[in-house]
Image (cartoon, rainbow, N blue to C red; front, side):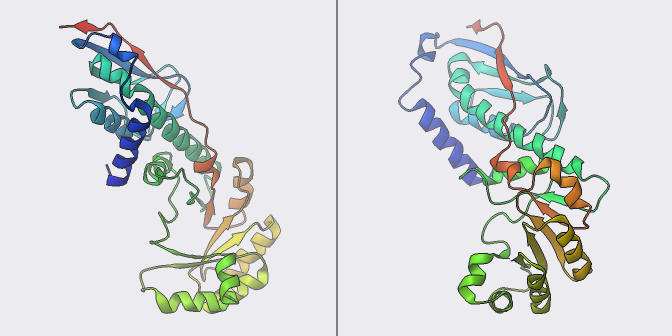
Length: 279
């Protein structure tokens, strides 16, 4: 697991446990138990590594075994894994581990529905930077587990010129040329446009990717025809599951959907306890 996600999990555990779990202390220290991770509704599983990391940070003696990998299509009522170890510390980690598993599986489930909505077209559904602070790597991994795709990870791995950059520099052309002059040849330059004149200006300046922001379907279709393969075309703005198919059919290459991470519903998973064993 990446260092940032490990730190996030440590912080989450510090938030929850703080000075100690005053409830679980009523359980004898020698008690050992086994619990099963159960899906209470259909879902795409994601976040298994985060669940395991939580339990191992709480207590390295805890053993977690998942029967399925991230990306698995899970039925309601299906057992997806088990947890064995000291009863006290399993219970200390339970809520944080489930919170992450539910959140990330919810993202994967929504990503799967989104990519299925554009099946048969060339469009790829991609995420955005509208992620939960500190959880970006985990959430973007969940998007991939669901079958959709990642946009840039952060501000460091791709140029995306938006309206405020253009306003600060004066024009689309000036902004694209400034990016070309200041970045290396391996970084793609994407430019957001809101009208067809902007499409022409971005093309003339040599943008690699043109983002059509909040355009209606007819204008999108015209823009795709005008670009004619000279740049990748991304659609963005107000994208919902019920609009995805129509947007894909305009011929765009990419559809960015912030809702994959900022609006995905956490799915229902539970930790169901077995018979505890006392040494």
